[in-house]
Image: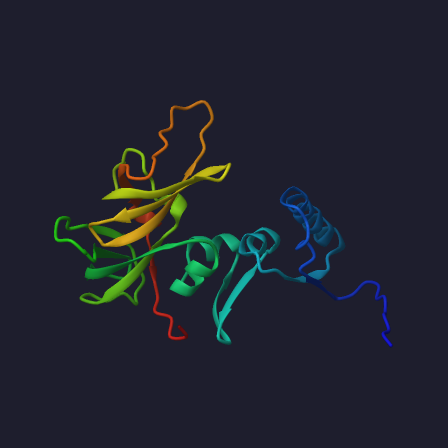
Amino acid sequence: MHSRALITNPSVLLLDEPLGALDKNLREGMQFELRQLQRRLGITSVMVTHDQEEALTMSDRVVVMNQGRLLQSGTPAEVYNCPRTRFVAEFLGTANVFACDVIDANPKQAKLRLHAGNAGEDIQFVTKASAEVRRAVTVEIAVRPEKLALDAPRANHVQMRGIVIEHVFRGAHHAYLLELPAINRRAYAYQQVCSGSDQPIYAAGAAVVASFDTTDAVILEADDAD
């Protein structure tokens, strides 16, 4: 025998996958409806979802945990754009993670060299750093796919020659899987669709130059829980 209770004006509202069975169009519309309803009623809400993009969309604050340890908390933009660890970077969205040697460092910036798989390119650059970065150690950096450009590189951009392995069209953007021989790694690049432009579309096998702004390279801390 099951019993049910209806509680009015709860102090905390638990939403357990409320949008899981909806089509994408309706789901996105309901995300805005739920946010407006939550703000109007002023009820603290805890939402369960396995969709990381939805977690960013619906929340005012994101907390990322791994094996019972709190790794990072902050606004969705803070956690997405400045992940502290590799787990956080890869858990919230897609991230290209590259290993680098620290050539020089101070509390404000670090000079890094990408680990080269082939001895043809020596890729060095300077980016923001924290006091924890030390010279002559190996660190990992994260670069989001939307920050990895395939158009003409600009000043301050780190450049790597690459080959397109696969291309898919996702409506709002083109997604590319690249092989980067200089560092013997694969990477993802997302290019926003630009209406009315002669934006090139690269087929599998095309040679490209992948680049990213040095300010978009986030130095990751070691995650002892992994």
